[in-house]
Image 1 (cartoon, rainbow, N blue to C red):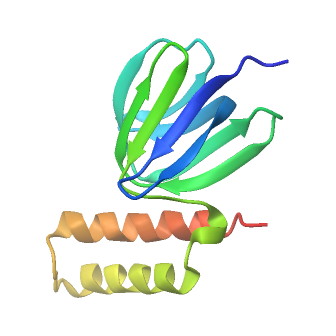
Image 2: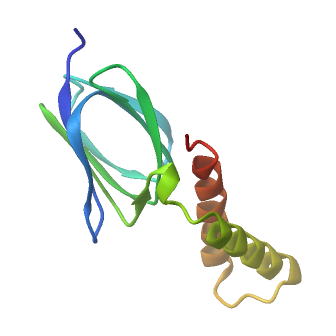
Length: 136
């Protein structure tokens, strides 16, 4: 049996996930990292992307997460993000609309927001669409 540890994902609105897991894979600002049981303790910022979770039965699940902070401790890992969604929770039409709006704003040069905010909106929409495609 694989070594397990507690992994939790929190957003400002809910506890998204809290279970024993075998591993997670997430993207930090300097690249992707895998966290397994007994990993060295650290705290690091994460970027918008796809969170991969290997559950206690050895099955992988994937979710969309926004930027946040990952804290790895001896027997518990906590991810705090602005938003997290399972594939079946993602509103496909809303994600398409957000992607199209961000692309149009960047193309036309008519920024409602600053360029970085528009690019971040586009990135979030693209990752939501990727995760939505994973639904069963």
